[in-house]
Image (cartoon, rainbow, N blue to C red; front, top):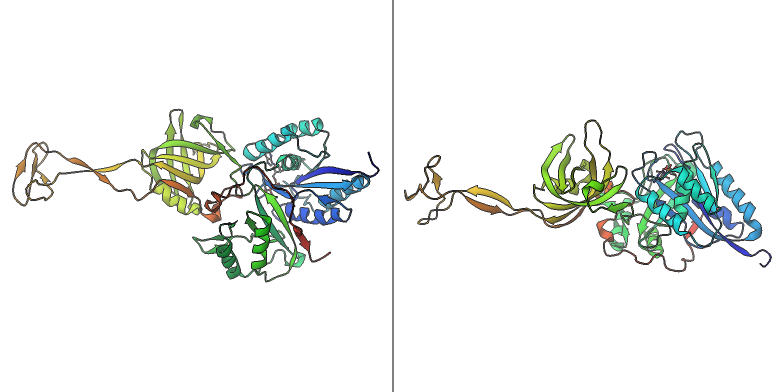
Length: 452
Ligand code: ATP
């Protein structure tokens, strides 16, 4: 091997932040700059991997990060130490529930088993033991703090190679002195960008409420994040959005956001597992009811079982659709499975509904008079019908079924933008899915800092 040959490594990390401070993507932004100082090359955009949105111990969006790098062999120890120091320095280690994890995997390719682990971590619950077994098997190095749970996310981020669909997010960060204050961005510029670049950027605004949704609300350092189909488009969008406060740095991440990667398609309702997100087909078997506070609940069944489905108030359009379902409609429901409790059966919290088939809605009406066309009146139980206009009697006629038109149309309905999960594929992305994973090459400038 030549002296100081180039080596490849994956660095995964997770669970550095708390609800009071920090953001793991910001740690990634700082780490990228730190590693560049050592002559490290990036083989891919940093990966922002959203894992199972139903894990009970997540802080916010269950995001984990991975950097794929190439480096001169002689900086290996130094780059690992700098990574550890930086992550330690920017983790809220005193906060209960912040359990950072770092994993270094020195391999060019990601083993299949790690890909499968990432898939499992995105769709269900995995254990630290499973993660540690894989870490030993593939000679990776792991470092965990507090309960060490972050090692799970760190390893899953390494295993997620986005073999199929993926998206990009450009995240712009605020300066330290502005963190905690109201975010200052020209909202009109965001609406304009959304219109100009649709459908190639998504989830910029909530059109129902006319509200900007690229700016988070908490004390974290994110000013805004723009999601889209390519690095070029999110950079173009960034150029169109007017920040009214300083942007300290920005980074383009590759991500599984907006791809529905969390959903498992089930063949039967009996296969539903708590803490997963599923797609399942069934027939509406209990009519929608509005329950406090303005949620809509109905039930579907198939030959293997029955399950409640809930459209919560913030789901907006979805709640309206759920309300207009009737018993007998055939639907495909998409959503997170909520465990049964004392007062509530197993429930699917709806993210989408695909209406497949509409049941006829019929009204039982008296027929029309064959002479004058007026609707006949009943003369009493078992006594036939009579026309009030021409007086004719019809002893042998009975009520007839009249089909009522349904306002609801067959098709796919998605929860309002404001209540979509990071992983939910928005309507705007249908037809834009990428097949066959990431292309080659990176744009020249995919991150920048005003401080270096
Ligand atoms: P943020 O999005 O702000 O980074 P977060 O919502 O990602 O925060 P974390 O603080 O990362 O939340 O906490 C999630 C924790 O759950 C991590 O420790 C991660 O390792 C672990 N975890 C993630 N997915 C799974 C899973 N499928 N099964 C078990 N544990 C998981």
